[in-house]
Image (cartoon, rainbow, N blue to C red; front, side, top):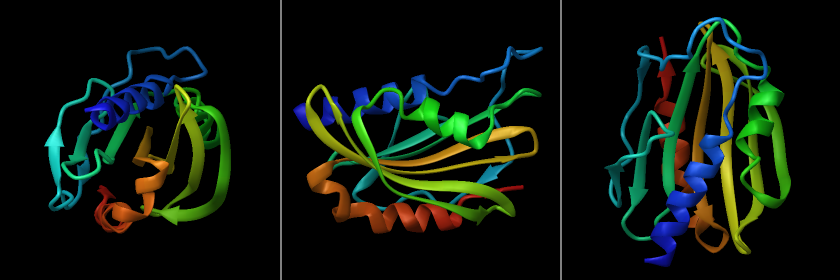
Length: 162
């Protein structure tokens, strides 16, 4: 039960920090131009107020999710990534690479941190396309990170913005 609650709290904190730096002229909307292959077992669809879609592992409570925000004033990639990490304590970026993702510049990061003193690890890809910002994220207790990261990588490779 503790693992399940920790996963939800971390997801809320990470996506709760995704805020535009500039004041938008209109309220951001969600992207409608996304396709992907849903993660397979042991992941199952779940609900989150802060994610467009989220799947939770029934074995580890790891989550795979994506978040979109579309407006005329989306923040830079670095600002968007920084906002996403605000919910973590004592975080350390383990790796960070500029990559080409969905025919756009993207930042892919692996981050260690803590949530209420509990070690967590996440992998996140942040990119912008068609006036929208996207966060494609895998969140895990640190000890469970390697158990299902391959399923996240498969989801990530299927994630397409038209």
